[in-house]
Amino acid sequence: MHDDTAGATLALWGTSALSPVGGVVEAEDSTSIKGVVRGKAPWTAGETVLLLEAPGWKIGGATGFSLSTNTIFDVDPAVAEAERLRLWASQQKARKAINLPFPKYESRLRGIIEQIKSMSALNTTIEWKKFLDTRSTEELSGRVSSLITDDCKAMMDGDAPPTVAVLESLQAVRDNHNAGVYLGLIQPNLGEKADQKVYAYVGSATAVARGLQERVSNHLSPSYRSKRLESAPNYYHYRLLEDGSRVEKFYALAQTE
Picture: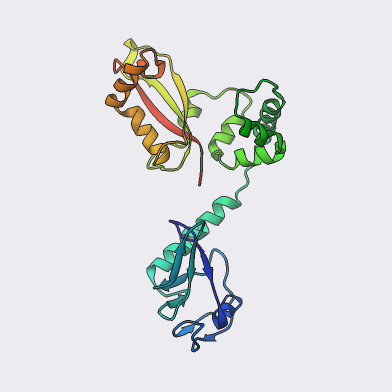
């Protein structure tokens, strides 16, 4: 079971274990729950809403809930939160059901992975080399592709390199705390007198707490950039922003769920 914050496993025992398959279950014995589980229809993934009050719980390798004699449990309660969760679940199913075809992108991605796997002098760790050698190109491309945003896939499916307008149409990083990969687009900020070149910076937010948003906040902070330049005076990314004649905007290329 899960909502829009986290997921957990629910263990059902005794007569309560019959409720997911449908039918009304009278909860009277000590192995079940208080009241009646109104489960006339079988539970449906992404549609059935469960309300638990005072469940048994554990946190270890995975979070788990169970029903105790103090648990109050309801199926499809008539409350506003249940309707909100159903809407959220339907949006998740719709989003994941969309399988937009990007044949050129898929072919290019497989080609890149095959080239990396074939490199004899690959600069990586023993663990990563073993990981690459023991996974097929299809498996690796599937894993990578599941993280790349659809608008980024569409961009990489094109016949020509992307224009600035295409880059600006990518998904902007706003309140996104997932780990991921981002594009920083650096453009003129002071009109015709400024350098009219457009620069692109690609980075990752995989080792930073609070993910993409935190990493972007670092880049946008003048104090953070100044400290970085003290240790790396030739760091070109921040040198471009030093005189205030350019502005940088950030777009998500890939992200975890």
